[in-house]
Image (cartoon, rainbow, N blue to C red; front, side, top):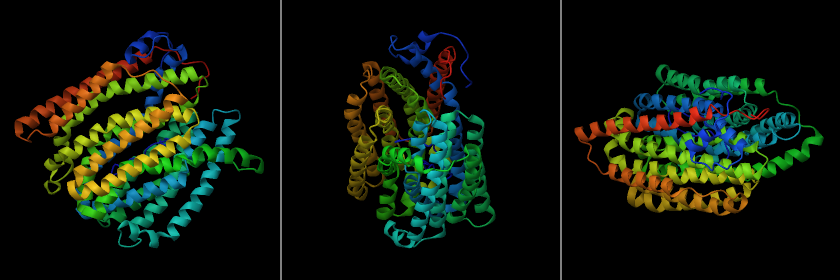
Length: 521
């Protein structure tokens, strides 16, 4: 789902709610040691782990490039647009994300799953056509009813920014399905071109329109829309959709039966990440939305990266046929990510005050956003755990469980936001998200443990995660004096080096493991 890192906008992968090509060789034990996975796991699992942190990571880099570009654009946009216009872009993008989920109907995940079946390529091409037809229908309904639903969300009518956002959502739904198909086929070049168009070109065009035309929210969103049209044309030329025949109705309906439950799941995921901004807008106004978004942009960086990683990884999990291999790979990937999260959480907590001062002017009161950052950063832990459970459920075909769990967690999040924002402001909204992510993980894990039993995470990993959270809380209480900021900067640099060494160890270990012959992707 296209997720917001406003502005600019980071276009996330067609994920479900959810380096170089490894060289030949046979050092399976190296991968096992690097990830602390079970050394008795099937050899194919070690090879897949090598691919997860090897070839598959290239797709993560492409998506992460969009996040990095959005991060560069943010301080420029906050100054060009001003607080009110910036808040307008954030709010319009939130509406776009909701409509995007409805338009896509989870078909990007359905395409990734179907393509590994017999005659999978033709099935995927026909599902692409279905995605176009449904996108046109959903977009037309949303546009026609815009004047009626806009005011209920606190907007001053169906503004140009909202109209562009509706069109942007419809077109993005088609692009997401195409990117899912390209990813499952491991077609890196066209995937990369489309990704760059809807990131580099989109951000450049938005800033150009704001600079040379008018510093308004609608001009910024218009730039995103135009670039998205170009990206969609390119992706359709690459995947070549095929007509849906009468004989295909059965498999199309079966696919929708699997993917439609992902719609409430992804809408609920949106509520977990973005609904607090709508509550803040309604109760506190657009200025506070802008302040919260700045803190959220920084604190949610690992959450966004994990979402991107999940999208890059899902085709490989779908390609596994053995329940034993699936269980071993889920556990190995989960524990490897937990280890990488420790330096990420600590590094973000240390460097956040410095980044805040770069990203936002003094009018945003960055020093008063540290508790918001703490709750947002720590939310990464239950979020990562929930994604691991989600992968297990998707491979087992339990999309309905994901939907029910996500809806319940979203209800908790919205309810807490309504209650806490009025009394505790932005910190209350961030705390509500932390609680909701924890509830979501618990609900998903209950079912995932039965659907695909996996080895438990070891005690040392759990202790490291808890310790990093406690340290993160302590760092949020430190005063922003000059010497404290200097120590923070040094600590953040050390954590970055720690993360790079750990990630490099995984990548280098994986590069010695041969990929299974004929494996996809």
